[in-house]
Image (cartoon, rainbow over all chains, first blue to last red):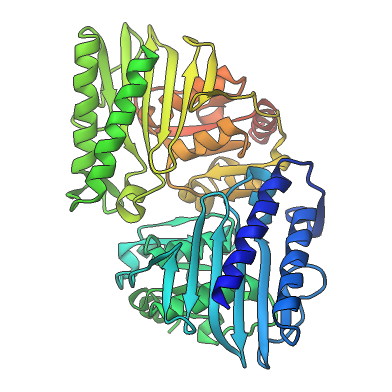
Length: 251
Length: 251
């Protein structure tokens, strides 16, 4: 299955790059900085069609095209974010990702995050027993403490100091705001960030968390709750050492 | 002169990449997140040696090796930041730049910013009458308003809401925190950010401002003052339309 999905992602990426050369049709969703383009919709449709041929019984949870209410706990579910970081895609024509995850009976089996313009594909999970950077097996990142690394953060959480954001930032080596969850997960998996906190929807964290778990890292929702996978919610994850320190802020 | 400098930068970049494969010697400067490595020092020394052979009369203003007090207003001065974004360099092994600028009698003539790991060299200024992306002439970016683009920002200024940072952020399409001034200047020059505000030293902004001016963009210090070029100071710059709006916040 993983080779098929990788093929879909590379094919989708070619469509995205072709789309960058043409005039984008940009619409607002919840507000003026929450955007969707014709490319987001076309890429989701392309991947959905591939899935329907590959496994007609599978269900789909996706950001676009009204497929955002599927539950992941029964059968095989593909979770799709056709373009994660749409604002970057529109403004920068870089710094965005294609993400796909496969859940079976609620258990994450495979995650894929592709930074299209940098040609960096992170993929793996229990089904293959590893995580890969392109075709190379990724080493388990060093289990760094909060004061040993950079923390990815959502700007609003940081400004409003929600969930101890400013205390966490101060204890870390610094924060980065990238505007694309996929890039933060890539950094965590490569070991170039120790963690990430943001407000995320299931398609934002579905792939990244499968690979984090595979590499021995942890994540949670607000106040240590499991992630709900049915709404936009607080997410925090990172190395075990960092997460243990972050949990202590809440006590 | 520009071809020699490009040659030094590419040669320095090879040394940096070689240095990434070895154990870095990391020291703290003003605090635990203000770092310098053996590579920063070696690269500055390498470039200084090249300059001394090329033009023995030129003066040097550089971040490392005690060369940080030179004034730029007399004769020819090379301004060097051997590794801009040292924290990223240490933590991420990417997202850092080599920067060089040439000033003559206080006037910026040439600027160079090289994103080593992405192989993106932005260079140009009055001496060549253009700005280049690698070997391709860069178009003048669209003169976007604040509400049409992303704003690069220093996390501390944003958190403390200094210089109207939060109002500026709110009016923009969003902020990005990259931890490397060179990357913010590259984004502005490519037109993928509308502006940038931070606390910067002369070697952080010397090259970027030469190229911004060449492309018809503006910048200033606190409350509209010119940049002093002799200390770490508030910097803000961007497209003319954005800067006109930002100046209005101060009135």
